Amino acid sequence: MEPMPQDTRLVNRAYWLIKLRWIAIAGVVAATFFAHSIMGVSVQDIPLYCVAAVLVLHNIISLLLLKRLLKTRADDIVNPIEKIINLQISVDLVMLTILLHYSGGIENPVVIYFVFHMIISSILLPAWESYLQATLAVALISLLAVSEYEGIIPHYCLQGFVACNMGHWPYVLGTVFILSTTLYMVVYMTSSISTQLRKQEEAYRQANIQLQQKDHIKDEYVVRLTHEIKGHLAAIQSCLGVLVNKFTGPLNEQQDEFAGRAYDRTRKLTKFVRALLRLTQMRLSDKFEMDIFSLKHTISGAIDAVRTKAEDKTQTLSFDIEPAAEKAFGEQFSIEETVTNLLLNSIKYTPANGTIRVNAKDNKEMVLVEIADTGIGIPQDEIDKVFDEFYRASNARKVERDGTGLGLSIAKQAIERHGGKMWAESQEGKGTKISFTLPKHSLRQGKKNSDSANQIINLD
Amino acid sequence: MKNARILIVDDDPDLTKALKVTLESKQYTVLTAANRLEGMKKIKNDKPDLVILDIVMDTWQDGFEMSRDLKADPRYKNMPILILTAAKDRTGIDFKPSAGDPDWLPVEGFLDKPVEPELLLTEVEKLLSKKT
Image (cartoon, rainbow over all chains, first blue to last red; front, side):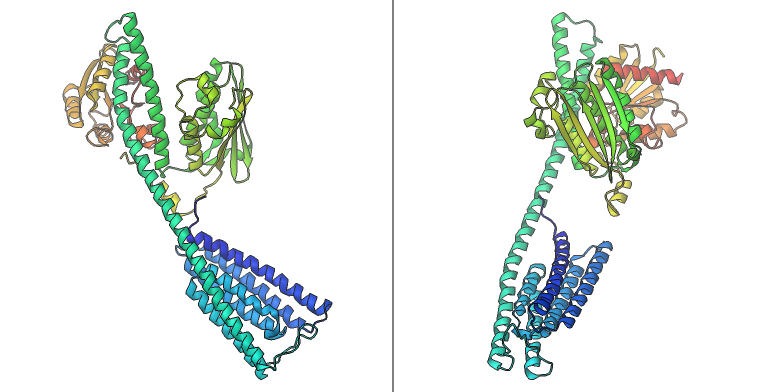
């Protein structure tokens, strides 16, 4: 899988933090209920339920803030999200301190839970921000311990759970000291690991981008090369065409045969080069005109274009479309070409008297198109490969020796460019069903659409 | 339209020669030009009945510009133009006037290179018969 960019990862983790908080809130309510009402421990249940309620409010606000931020589609969302997360963690620390105050102060082993906040902070935030959060936690713990020890605020002993030690200063000092060092150590350890992971991930992402750029350069090279070849091929084919069509006078039988063979092979090579160009061109170009178009008319048009070929083999061609699937979003010309090519494939590999059915169905946000034939099918172990470039199924090679092996790759590429998917189901000897999906509306928002609307044609 | 005069403007000499022989098999008189300048000169002097035009010659848009110039000129605007190009494969974009803006490529016919002789002859005949 392609490594995710930094911002997508951060957004996912911001949601993760909110999910964790729901679990924590449930934990607070359950623990309070269990301790107070079942175990009979003397915790201040009403204030604790209030803390839980405030946390609920806090979580809802955090969620809304995050959603609003994502809606603005600002260019830099990393910074504001980090700010929101920072604020959330600080609020959480304060809430945990208040919670502790009403449930025994630092005597309550729940004080260990400060560690969780440090881990989360170290995973989500830059190291120095996590150290600040640790410092805030240490300050809050110290404040709580000192205020309760000095009697500035009341100390609620956890009678029925632990003995009351708040009057004993070495205990208070020791606990605060050990807790503080624990928090800093946790931040140090977790941050160093997560920083390293983040760096590694970024390196993978960069490597992936570089690979894509190299692939692009390769594609451009292929286009230049094949176009050059095609120019020569066009001249060769035209010259041979003059001989074969006897425009220059009659040929003897052998001359006619060899000129014919050469002409045939040249035509096949031209077809192959054309397909290769089309495929590579499609991969290179991200500018194309997408619009809402009538899928019904497009498929009907493709069927009309191939009808005589099917009739030559007395095959039955049928077409059904659900009303909700009549319109799709994309490049009409490209879809018509794709459907035509899939139909020609079906006609080629379906014996005489077979049937070819086209069905277009409504599928929520997408339209599902299926082209099913009663042809030779694809061997089970080759189904996954038929969309690979230059791959030809073993039984297809018997029907036509010189296919390009590019037809289905081109079709799949065209559909994927639209944000759709294409797949094949088949039973050898029984038939093949090629299915693809197309969006009903634009999938891309904003910028990219206006780019493709101002399409320019560039031959170089 | 027998004995019609056809001008081929294309920078590939081998292809041009093959097209010339192909067209001559139907008794057309065929003139050739290897670039835009020579093409315009022959159009002016020899007044062909049809022009077969390549797109990518000295520049990638010679054919586009030439067809626009011709259609803008009242002397030549009724002379049919048949585009014969490999440029479509290069861009993957459909150039047919029906597929887009008729002002953008104002031509009467459009064929992909290389073309089957039969298809070329049918198209030429169709365009010439429309003219009369």
